[in-house]
Length: 364
Image 1: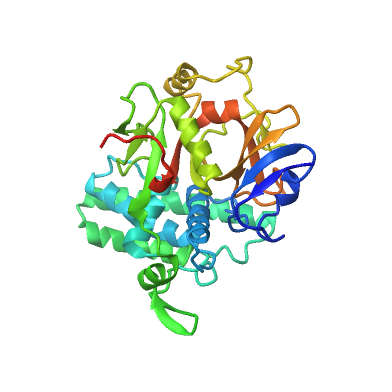
Image 2: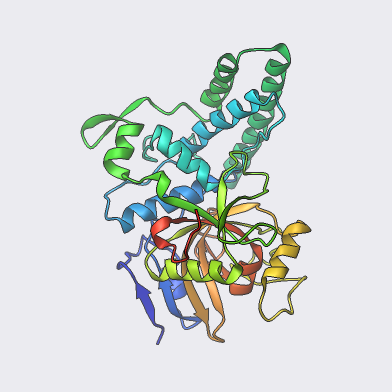
């Protein structure tokens, strides 16, 4: 009989993929409680949806009563942060909708959070595939417009704050403006007050982990990936320490935000099972040299973000990591993807984790 270790008893609505791991196909499953699957609805904001899912799971782990959070609240403010950086660097820095978990944490620390029921970034009524495709087209056009406007303002020598007002106007028109205050549980509150009272998470408690040999191990390093426009540092661990830390975190009730590569995933979009295809397919164990080579040759890139919530084993004893995707519950296994251990070792760029889950000694 399948053995499943539950940290908290899940209701049917908590995980639509619960039944998938409860079949004879998998056994010895560890699945940490989190909220329902999110759907980015063809927007390019997987980083925010996956990171929001992490924050919600952290609130559950810590016993806080917090509603589903707005992913687009973080998106809205991050657009402004990114635009400010682009303006200050006279158009020489990165301006892109793609980002990482640390940006959600930055916005959370600075601006707080907001319930999804209050602000959805105009996604609430986007349901059909046609509507989602329309939203994707509109977002692409918005991104292009923001860049065109900023480049023109930079050329004209406009002040940063004046230029940011132009970006705000575009955002307010296209995805809506988050309210300054809102009603929650019969009281008027702001996003910062809401975060302090109901979320109560400290963004400074979260650490980015990676594993690449061109940097010293057990040190904080600057990872050279396009999305790291904030120049955040990562704790760099040898691959075996990296994997042990992740496994230990899951088995001790923590979840993690995952940043990695799905571009070379073979059947990633088909059945939800992901194994190494092509290069290194015949390797019994993916080692440090393999992931380093893939990183340096750019066959591993940071092109997607998901929420790591569990570990399971198939009938052959092969380990899989369970990640909540944000593409809807009709894709993958109830909305989740199962990454084989070798795929995880090869294609994971980094993870974000609560510092209490790290068992490895850190040199500061």
